[in-house]
Amino acid sequence: MSWEIKNDRPVYIQLVEELEMRILNGTYTSGTKLLSVRDLAGEAQVNPNTMQKALGELEKKGLISSKRTSGNYITDDEKLIRNLRTELAVCEVEAFCGKVKKLGISKEETIELINKEEF
Amino acid sequence: MLGKLIKTEFKASGRLYLPLFIGVIFFAVVERILLEIMEVEQVNSIAFNILFIAITAIFVIVIVSVCVSGQFISIYRFYKSVFTDEGYLTNTLPVKSRSIIISKLLVGVFYTVFSYIVLFISGLIIVAGDLLKSALDNLRIDLGIENTQIGLLDFILDSVINLKLTFSLLAVLIVGSLFFNILVFFVSFAIGNMANRKKVLLSVIIYIGIVNVLSFISAGIALFVSKLSIKNYSMLGVDLLNITLSIILAVMVVIGLASYFATNKIIKSRLNLE
Amino acid sequence: MSEILKCTGLTKKYGKLVALDNIDLSVNKGQIIGLLGPNGSGKTTLIKLIAGLLKQNSGELTVDGKKIGIETKGIVSYLPERTYIPNWMRVIDIVKMFEGFYEDFNLEKAKTMFDNLGIKFNQRIKAMSKGTKEKLQLILVMSRDAQLYLLDEPIAGVDPAARDYILRTIITNYNPEAAVIISTHLIQDIETVLDDVIMIHNGRLKIHKTVDEIREETGKSVDELFREVFKC
Image (cartoon, rainbow over all chains, first blue to last red):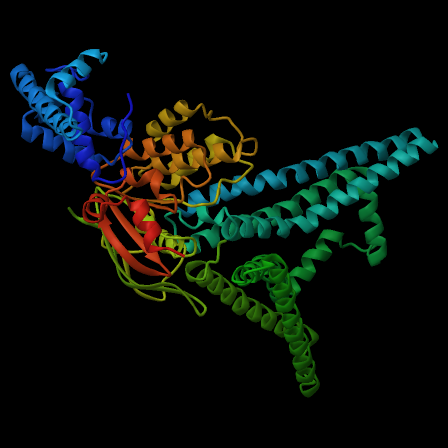
């Protein structure tokens, strides 16, 4: 599992996205303890302060909770995870539909194409 | 920290000196054994003679290298650890630059003295016993004191007591010159370090320059003192000698201290590592 | 955040050549800083001044509020471009030397890193490859619990695996009480590791910003910006 940091956008935003993705898709199991900031930063080869900032962002969203002494834990609020996942999926589908619409393809045709796609 | 520096330098230099010291003692022992064989067995074959000459030649080479290396190794160590890549380590240690100089100076003087002791011991190994006795007897005869009541030792003691001042001056001068010579080398290499190319060559030239200037000064002093003696007929030869020695000592102390401070200043603010 | 390094009007000349020209700079604890600039821009001069190998012609330079001297040398851990470990030593000799002279040397840390890289205490420096020597030196420098690390071109000329190891070492040894200054001209490799970027050119300070500020403001990576700023 690699961290790909692209050149064009702030590093911490990309870290937030990647971490969020990992929590939502279950790579990081809910309720478990997350690696330390330093280890995460080492894995991603990024600045520990930046990683800390990204984790702070996730904490604001409620995806992780930090316990003062024992580190960061992934939320066990399954409902929150589900909701966020759906939210994100809706965003993606909206974007996708917008593009397909531009091509002038009808909804039925699109669904047919999606059905052909391996999932 | 000075103690730690001395310890480190002691080990680093010792590594270079030790093989030489061992070599001197080893060849002295071999030489002595060969001498004994010649004496007792009266061997006189060509093969044995060739062996003897070969061993003696090596022995002489080792002795000469100890004489030369005495100071050379301390200069080499100083240059290498302060002004080459190793300088990145030496000069960023949390120690005063003067501690670095002093540690290397003391260790240098120690090993120089020690190398003389080793040479003396190797000499003893070769002549100890009957050989030493006959050598002393010869000396007595040469000095024309073989039949007097005074032994050689008394003779030496007598002259030391009579010429107390002169001998103490000489002793201080000999010990001082060990420090002095190393310090002049240090400052030569410190100045040489400021150049951007051919640092070692330049340092050697500077050293030779300083030594030459000093011999001019010495010659000047000798001239001055001899003029003084012409003016003062009442002056004794011994006084003359003492005055000369004192002046040389004073010059040495001044130049030595100047070299030390200049070296320190250069290491502190004019270091020129590549 | 408290300040660990401060330069005001720092100027260094080599004869007529001005290597650093009136540099004002402040670095806080807990930061990893990239010191960027083309060759000959003054990066190494700045680092040597902080390490106490050079003396400035004018201006002030303090580490933890103190002028450069024995005290600052005791809290600054410096990795030069050169390999400086005497060839005749074994690993144990240089480790003992570090332990003896630096109060902040952490032997356990060094042991762990030696184990990771398969470096043995009785190994001779003479028999080591250049790469191994460089790694050994990095371990020694990073094993100190120093307050300011100065790493001069630590990733120049090393293979990608070694580069990753070096970066990981820097990150995992991160200490909020210490700052790290890394000089390099290979920005792309390290820019995600940095908090701040300092760019100097011809001895002058050009830019001092955070990596994300640069990305946000310009939409470019630090590397791309660097190429633009220093275009030939």
